[in-house]
Length: 490
Image (cartoon, rainbow, N blue to C red):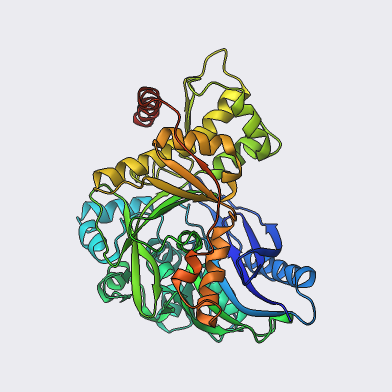
């Protein structure tokens, strides 16, 4: 009998199921995209049933093609797009409103009014977060305010809230388990990251009944047993983490000072700060990196809303390319100092600016500008935004010298070389870039006893290729200064 770990990786634009061998290699994978809905300017929604159906179908598919009759899935891990908010009926399991996605900015005005009341410092002290539409609390409040009867039903205990991990766990366990882990809880604006519990004062501030909320567990824990889902029936969910924390775990960044950056729909730079929840003075976030055996490890994080989504826009919106793989040869044939800057603030700007009202723009267009310059500027925008985060961390007294990277964009060698150049730092790409899904599998494997320690997991990390900076400091500074000028013009 061959044993596997199954990771459910529920992302912003697609759902994936990946079977990992116990030595951390991919055995089989299945992926499905699902529709994005934009009902108004700055609004982003998903149909929770689309999410559930794609998770079910990818799990069924990967089990059918990757797991023989005599094979066994030891445990399941879930990793998910964070902050995305679902409220559902406890009796039926049906959502009462579409999932409001992390990118959604509909509550920007209310967040602004809370800031004007000087509430942000106290919220930040408890949660490590800023008051921003990005996080779940104001999304929950919006649903309770705008769905008829929702507030009353919530107060009667008829409704449940969850980020996507909780919603999937509820469905997988047939409505038996309403749970989340500390990493996902730490992204709601309702969780005290120091006390490791839902905060009554924050619940009161946002007017959210405690009965809505899931039980908060360690990231490696017995979350519940799967029922009614084909060959996974009877298997237990034993790992759970938000996608960026799962990527940190999959990159085995377990020591203080280790950092990873993930390039998916958005970009997220996360630096392990150990058992200390460091407060940023430059608008980075303090968050739970993972929690094991009741003990949290913390991280400093910079969140960029648009990374790979900018390339998706170049493909689907402007139709300048047919496939993302076309971007690398286009960039290779373009000077890095072509003069065009694309600022992809399609849903506002994240760290360190936190401007929900900013919108995207392209600067430096001339008669000579063509497709290759605009596409290259799109790739560079991801690297410039990472530089913004590096600068903020430097001002906070921490500078990651080596960066472990993952996500779909890191297959592009040109991007990683330019990233190393603009950061002036070494960039390491692991042999296995699916580190988000791998992190969820590692957490499940820890709880199941497949792995004995974090040291066991660290020994499994392998580097595929390192990229070292070759650009001069003067050229780096000149290019980055152009980016900062573009930001100031928004």
